[in-house]
Amino acid sequence: EKNIIDILQRAKGMVVVDECNYEYLGETVVNLIDKHENLIISRSFSKNFGLAGLRLGFAISNPQNIKKLAAFGQYFRVSRMAEKAAGKVLKYLDYYRKAWEKIKKVRDKFVRQINELGFSAYDSKANFILVEFKNKEETERVWKYLKEKGIYTLPGWENEFSGLDDQFIRFTIGEEWEMNRVVEVLSGYVKRH
Image: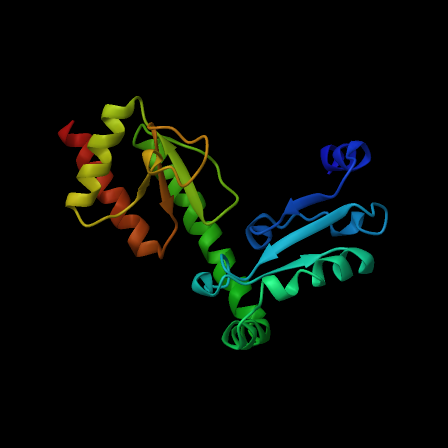
């Protein structure tokens, strides 16, 4: 929060803080909105509510900023289906909270297991983790091995994430049985190599 306050005080324009993974991180700067007129927080229904195809998000800020953003609304229309879906998910927040807690537990266990296999899994506060391998060749071998076993991941060279290089594979956290299967397959890879 201290870093964001510093940025807000030095910025000559608006500062947008991405809280699209708020549901997993649990940290927010909403409390700074009243003190900093240049703060806009963006959140999403897309990522953590299972509505990725609807591309639905929202902004949190002071009334003046929201009014300015609303002027752009004609260019970023929200479909009726997206509105209805958002309304529905908000009625089931307890269900989603339980799901997020479950994913956090599965994620933390998965990180631990991957590291025990000798790979370098980074701690994460989201519903995915990054695993770094020794070099591009090893990353490609692991990626191909997983693919042969029916496990599809996102390698760094796919360039969805700027700055991510060829030594990384991104794993989205699924059900516990799915992640156990990934660990089982990676364990088999380690034994073979």
